[in-house]
Image (cartoon, rainbow, N blue to C red; front, top):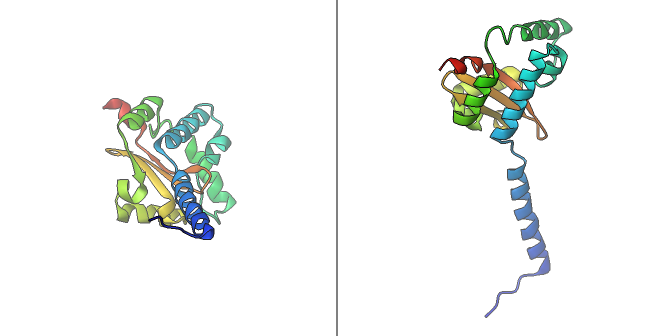
Length: 156
């Protein structure tokens, strides 16, 4: 005995299945996050703070003064050892990647998402001990929302 489904049902099933897989494929992965961190580090080392800032998500509605202050703070990122090549390598090899709520805890992740005015379900993180990299996924690319203590991993 065979089961016959109308063509429309089969087409609908195929489209539904394809949509589920496309949605899964649309999520960022650890390798993408590491590439963003490496690009960020290169721009900071080159002192190209405009290019570095382009890799960071800034909330809507910031004043020009707030944006200028942010770019000024970028110049201190390497000095404060917030990021380094050795730290990125260790974070990449040993860090935990996942949704921001999963890796940072729901309360902390919610505060970060609220601060940046982005949906929590579109935030991801790469964490190892006190080293944190938080990202916002806009559906096409990852933008940094947190970069903390990654450069200090090279001490461990």
